[in-house]
Length: 294
Image (cartoon, rainbow, N blue to C red; front, side, top):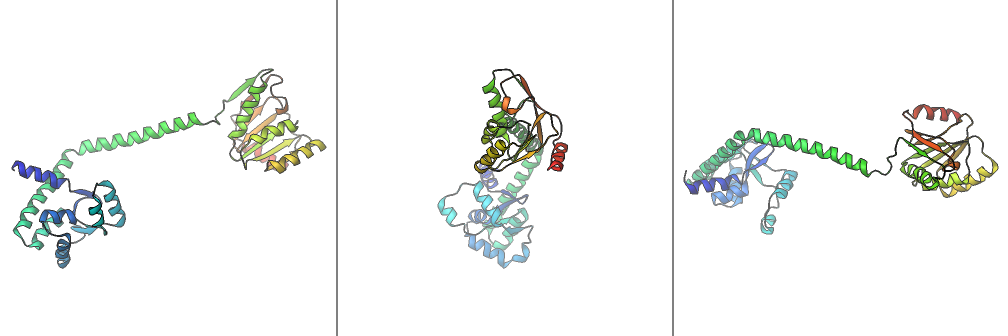
């Protein structure tokens, strides 16, 4: 094969696309190689449609057409000339074209095109292991990227809290900030079990997100607490408060799944030593007991 033929073969190979898992050439590119109009080539095919079964020739779907256009660079003139999806010809379809175009040029060009298909097939077969390794590396890279993304998302989450925290006397700001950040982390609901509720405790929950349900269980709803909670509920809904005298300790449940144990009433945080711990238990049992109480 001469140097010129090699160059032409490489140019032809650049016009071979992979569509539906097949190596194909499009009618517009074949027409240029055969030195005929695309319209003339397709008319010749349609006159001999019986010779071109779907494994020889098929028209691209709209999606395949758009995918193909997005992968190549073409001028505005070319785009204007491509109003309809083109026809794609497999290796067998190209071989059949030479018999319907009836010209010596068509036969010579078809031979070059067939050689290009053969060269492309040999290249794919000889580099199959390389392609397989590249696919494996790509999958591993995607998996790694997903893991990195999860780590970065976890690091960027502001609602991740330590499993336990101890606050000493005088750490009023630190304690309030810790509780406030925990309240802000709720997406759907907050349940507070605390026997001593006052307006200071209610003020903490003004920091929760819009639409997050606040349910408070306390030992006794005094007249003052009822007035304060009614005013709070009107301005910062949704909110419920119920009497519940079966708990000595304080608990907070975030989004019906995460339970925190609080070593002191929220109204006294920062005044004395107390601990705040995330419990390794499911919130389901506790919630069921609360529902029975309601």
